[in-house]
Length: 103
Image 1 (tube, rainbow, N blue to C red):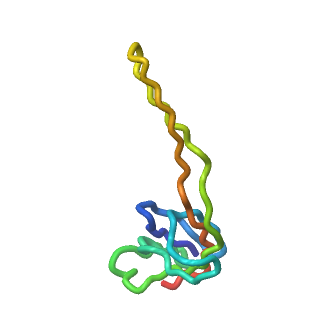
Image 2: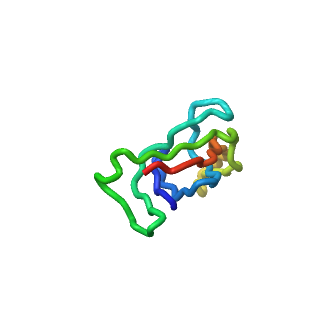
Image 3: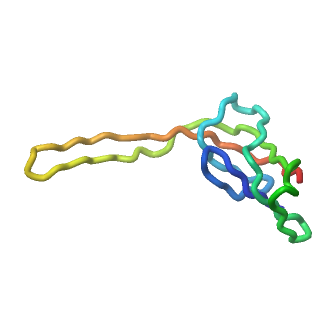
């Protein structure tokens, strides 16, 4: 059984027991959360459920940790103008352990 959820503007395919890294969520480590919108659920009987049939579907999980991703270097350059600029970015994320899919 797996589900497709949307959180933080991105879509993830999750199954019970998976650990995923999503955009930062409010909450302490160990807190129970309910993940974003459920877009689709594949049942144990291999039926794909989508649309209005998922109005009561939920995906529960636990916050496993918070962290920061690897640094991405941004280098801006304009030739013949002596313009160079280097900046870096590290995106925050939250690790979530998926508990159960209620469909």
